View (cartoon, rainbow, N blue to C red):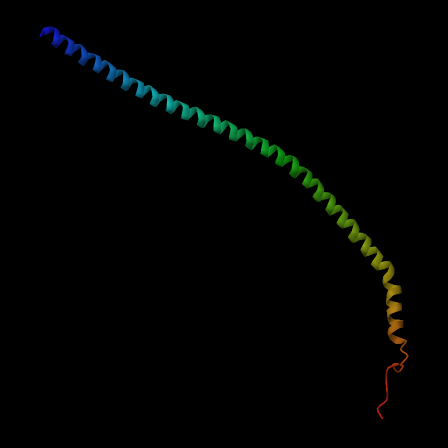
Length: 118
């Protein structure tokens, strides 16, 4: 009988040790998952910061060239306005004379398709 009770005691102790090892393994797994999640979050944050920095650099490069382009377009527009204004002042007098002469020199004529009413 004592050997049976010793065998049962040994089985119970072995079962308890197995249960303890299982709980310890679950705790380690939980810790490792938590640690892996933190590492992944840190890696994602690092990657995001790196990509944002690259984006800002590209944006600065593109916007810088757009700024130059904007200044160039503004300069061309100003030059075109200046040319049109000078052309207007040069040609205004002669155009006014042509316009007034066309208006004043009226020679009334009957239209060739006009048929007098009978």
